[in-house]
Amino acid sequence: MNRTTLSLLAAVTSLAAVTGFAALTAPDGGTATRAEAPARLPVERSSLLCPAPATSDIAETVYTSITPRSGAAGGGSSSAASSTTSTAELRPSVTTLRGEAGDADGTGEEKKGGGEKKDGEDEAGQDGSTKKSPSEKPVVALAQPGKPVGAKVSGSAAPALVGTATGALASGWTAQQTTTVSAGSGRGVLGVSCTAPDTDLWFPGASLAKDRQDYVHLTNPDDTGALVDVELYGKDGALKSSLSDGIQVPAGASVPVLLSTLTTDPAEDVTVHVTTRTGRVGAVVRGAGDETGSDWLPASADPSGTLVLPGVPADATSVRLVAFAPGDDDAELKVRLASATGTINPAGAESLRVKSGMTASLDMKDVTRGEAGSILLGPAEGAPAAPVVAALQVTRGKGDKQEIAYIPATAPVTERATAADNRAEGSVLSLTAPGGTARVKVTASAGTEGGTQAVKTYTVKGGTTLAVSPPVPAGLKGSYALIVEPQSGGPVHAARALLLPEDGIEMFTVQTLPDDRGLVEVPAARQDLSVLGD
Image 1 (tube, one colour):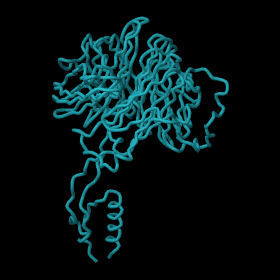
Image 2 (image 1 turned 120 degrees about the vertical axis):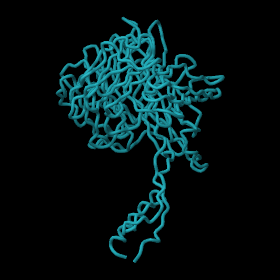
Image 3 (image 1 turned 60 degrees about the vertical axis):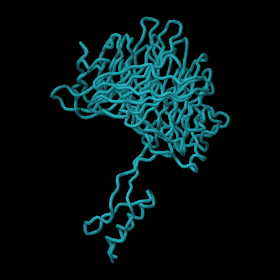
Image 4 (image 1 turned 180 degrees about the horizontal axis):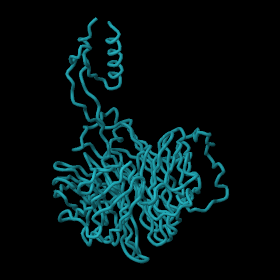
């Protein structure tokens, strides 16, 4: 064989070892085999990370975890052999360590002995690695697809969780953490979908205002340390900081970092940018105000010229849009509201200019006016589509009875998305079709303690938001999951609000539902080396 043929054969052999198949082009440019479309197969391993939930002794945290059964989102089912070795567990992190300028429990107060090694905790090396990974018994462990499990933890001792799912339980694995704090400065319902690790995350909507105590929680799922940079951007650009570069997050550990300790520059609206130099982390921001309560701010969808922020409640008393332009160009944005009846330009809040490298905000007041909706962002007429990230700070109630939640921009549900924690009362599902009309199947799973699943199909007219009380499993006991699967039509964006009022306070949380990424494309072709000549 000549050298070209030998190199080609080596490449084909390598590809076949990974996928079991190979597509090949002959040296003379002819096609050696018939190429086939990539197969979409279930992922066989996934990771989720949950931040340390609360600092209050009166906090109650509920965890709910589920892997949906294979269905319309498809991919078939895993083999019996793989299902027998499947696992999906959330375990306590090695420890929740003091951050660069924070503390172990997120209160802002240093505690005696906070820097000392705890029992069972290994010393972290200079690279942030430790000898041990999370090893305590799991807080939540799944047994089978389609059947959610739950757990409850009381008080402030609940740790951050690190989890891995394998085999038949990996595809679409979802977990939700919902904490209720009935009193104090951190009061509220704090809900967050446990997140996958990443290396580049944007959080518009944080704050350095005097009445705020905002933390970014960094959790490392891996066996080696991660090195993390945290950048802050206000209305005039990057905020000066000498502490935000190179934060070490040891293996299997979680580090909460108080944002106000990273800079002396004041800023009401802040965009937090988390990147890793080495490793990967799960990250989420906890925003807490003296008068507005607290909730989790998840990362925005990737920078884009068009964004959808779904699920603004009908009774929102205040909506604030925060956006950031990470590129080289300014963004001239058109702001629209997709309501139940159509898309409108909200009076007094029709546009927003976001300068490159700067954070901009828009007070939209009570934009929904008694009708649930979603915010659509796109380039203003005649303006180029400059990429932005964005989030909403939503308030319900007034005065000392108000409560906040956050809605980041979210990607559409392409095949399937899941809200893991829902109750018999208080759940509101929002489905937004920014383009054409769409049909969506919604499955209510069995309950964590009993019940039979229910299924309902909805039609969402193009340019509208449909807010519904979702189906509830018959004979429900415990909490349950909602599984959203588009069936036909245009793109669909989804969010679920959980309304849990207490003592006259309209406590609530909103979780957006991006696609669960339970399927992955695998190249498929038949291996045929007969065309290779001497």
